[in-house]
Amino acid sequence: MSRNVRIGILVAFVIVAAAVVAVLLMGGGGDEPATPQVLQNTSVPGATAQPDEPTATPVPTQELVEIVVAVQNINRGSRIPPGEGVAVRFQFWPLEALPFNAYFVEEGQTKQEVLESIYGRIARTDIQVEQPILRNMLVDDLEDLAEVGSDAAAILPQGRVAITVPIDRWSSTGYAIQPGDRVDIIVSFFYQDIDEEFQTYLPNTVNLINSSVDDETNSIGLTIGPDVNGRFESRLIPLVRTDQNGNYVQNPVSWPVIERPGGTVIPRLITQNTIRDVLVIHTGEFPRDGVLFRQVATNTPIPPTAESARAAAQPTTGPAPTATELPRPDMMTIAVSPQEAVMLTWLMDSGVPLNFVLRAAGDRSRVPTDMVTLQYVMDAFGITEPVPIDFTIIPNVRIRQSTTLVDFNPLNNLIGN
Image (cartoon, rainbow, N blue to C red; front, side, top):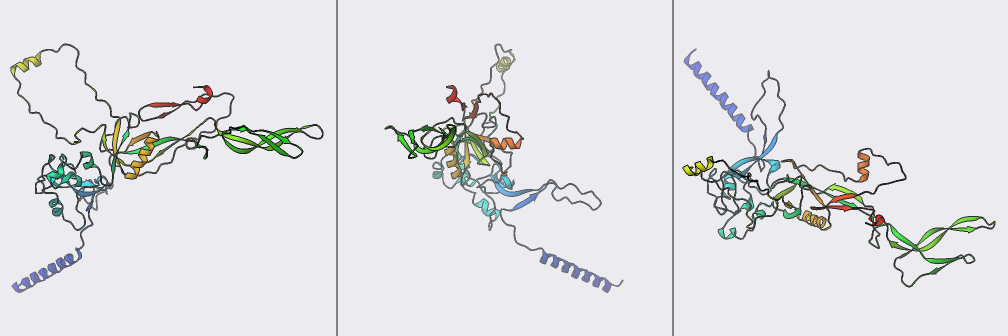
């Protein structure tokens, strides 16, 4: 092959390669993804199945977003030094567990711009390593540091308020609930019909008015005392009379009565799931200084001396010391919306017990539930109405209050308890 032919082939190859590159560049453009940037994460990123290899079962994907986290412990009052990776950096975080007020790249921003808005600001609380940096954790001036309030307000999500509710070993899932968990709130209360005018429990008591019937005029004469307390109504009263043949017949007559409140109350119990996906801020009382996040002190080991070694080698006498168990908390602070806080206050003031059920970590679902009543239990488990018999038992219904058990006996009025 001549030298001119080889040069021609080489030139043609260069022209074809340039055309291919131009086509790829023209077709590979596009806009940046919307922020925050959400990525799909699998357990084997980048792996592809070969044609002759069996296809593996697909792994469920998880949506991730990059947020700013601390790469070292940052003390309260410290300024955030500049430089990514010095004190803060971006890190992938599950989208379903994204904090309300975390720092992430919003539309029209870059990572550097987000970091620049953090550099030089002052930490208003102690921030632990790998902890997300929240917007209300930082202040601009040292003078603001003393005026920002408690750490609880700093970690409270935007649009939420903190409210403290009573708990015990039953309502707190055996004290398993800890700060950072999420719970649902189930309530139970009695439902009872009342008289709309008297505002008392039904049924009412009915007293007959002293009266007489005039057969000739078919009128009723009433005799009412000076003190009448009740509501005038009329009821059908079965009067017994004799007919023309001297036979006794029953003749219902509309008779005036005075109706008063009374009767034995048998309420109906109702249970329902109410407020859901509630963030737990704290269990028990808050520290007096309001500081929740403290640096853990590390003790420097002291070299043992000969005297301490001899003391350690001596056998101990007497009973072994017993560990002092800390008292269990009887209150819990949660973050809810302002309207939910009003509703919880009404429930607590009404004496309605609250039951907190623990949600799985990362579970933010809202599965609908049905209100549970006696009829619901009968239908759900196929329970039929029992056959009437000539004896009974005295029921004793127990309803949990905040920290005590209160006995409610619907037959107290009958048995005199």
